[in-house]
Length: 193
Image 1 (cartoon, rainbow, N blue to C red):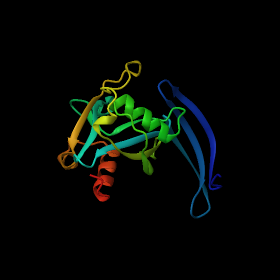
Image 2: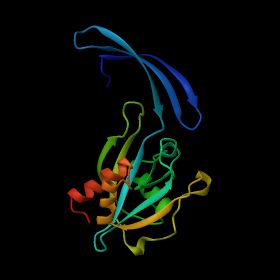
Image 3: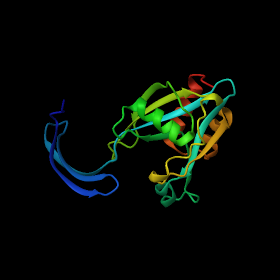
Image 4: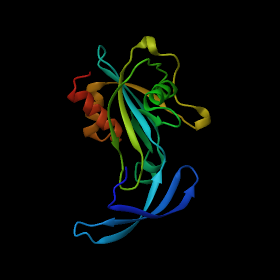
């Protein structure tokens, strides 16, 4: 279903390198019923999924730490970010994606996860919607050391952190990743850990 107040007039491909960047011209009807035109660049990197792994009995969560070039270019001196496990859907449904990504990145093999919400992360310029999950883990689920896939150039450090410490890391600025903050807040509000 499309909104008749917005009409895409033109889409120009600017880049198809790592992901797709288009310049889109859209005509839209204003409140006074007149029409106006906007030209915007829109980045399409596909949709993704993220998960907070938690262990209620130990009071811990699994997070990851990895280099993120955009954060480095924007003043993050180390370039490293602490995050929940996440990845692009590729051809998978969100649940299958996050189960796959969890094992690749953290080494834990989950059999079930719970979807808690979905959200656009930067809707002013990026098409991506993220599907958010939580999943309980224990040591019996650990099947590898994780760390990501070499052919995807991933070098991911797996962190097991007490939940209370992770939550304080939001306020201290040690955790600055939006998806991680959202899932830690979800866990706090819902008394998961």
